[in-house]
Length: 368
Ligand SMILES: *Cc1c(COP(=O)(O)O)cnc(C)c1O
Image 1 (cartoon, helix red, strand yellow):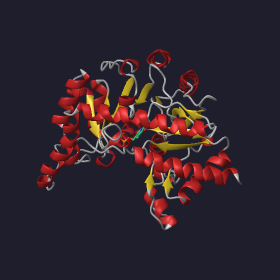
Image 2 (cartoon, protein in one colour):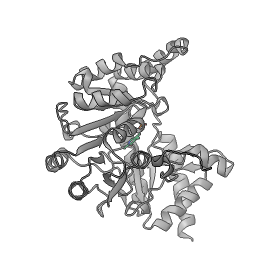
Image 3 (cartoon, rainbow, N blue to C red):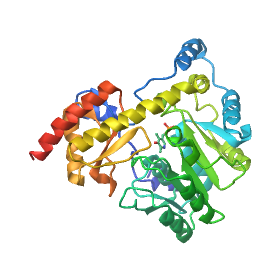
Image 4 (cartoon, rainbow, N blue to C red):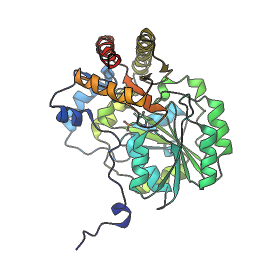
């Protein structure tokens, strides 16, 4: 007898959105000395968060507040929205699953850029949706006009956009995003993944309008706040949309420690602002490194820079050459981004280590 899987699940292709550096280390039988492939922060967490985490260790036997009220109240005050406009989840990655589940029936179309953030696609496939892809433009931007056109053509209920974008690092300003929202069909929601919101010019982020039922904004503590391992993100949306998420979300998915640490980090706004400044310096270092080697790069508003190796073959080889030198980076898989390697901004020491390894690997690559 076949194992009686649910129809949707038996149709799900096996897919890993991200192969973890630990998996690669096990394959290589060696550990990376520079971990610069997953856009993890190299700048630690707020000392206030650290102190609160240490104190909270004594209560790790308790479950979290399943309603996350302290954190949501604080976020609501900061963002100028109501507490009922916010849901907290296991990082943006977890919330993306909630969104897809809430808005997709099996076989329905969902629109995203080809080669965009893969965890979204992972959830779409997992819930039986159908992905409609729109290529990036030749200068590696999300093609908003074509994305909106594709939502119309396919009658999609969700359009996904990461802005600032990962894996390209490009950013579309407020006017472009608002124009796309205006042109979106009435019954289509815009999923705006703003994992890198802190790194963008504040005046270029569309103002938050919590009454707009067509927009879901996603934010995270993983990047500027440096808490990727704590798994905490939130969505801002209209009350009706949030109430729907409340019906289907995992109530005890976000740990106590994550909640108190996030709250403490919000109490220390200078910390994240300082990370954003240091990251900008780091991007400038990587840009100078690329120029030194006559390589192009994509101007980025994130904590990584994509360096142009001029062909997919070269970028693939570069990832291997860097692996051999103990350096973890990633490479986007889909053209036109597949010519690039994407390197996270490390500390000044990590950047120097990367520059040395990259220059050496490039020499090996150019020697064939
Ligand atoms: C880092 C990142 C995420 C993941 O965020 P988590 O809150 O750690 O799940 C999601 N989307 C984009 C665009 C990212 O860059």
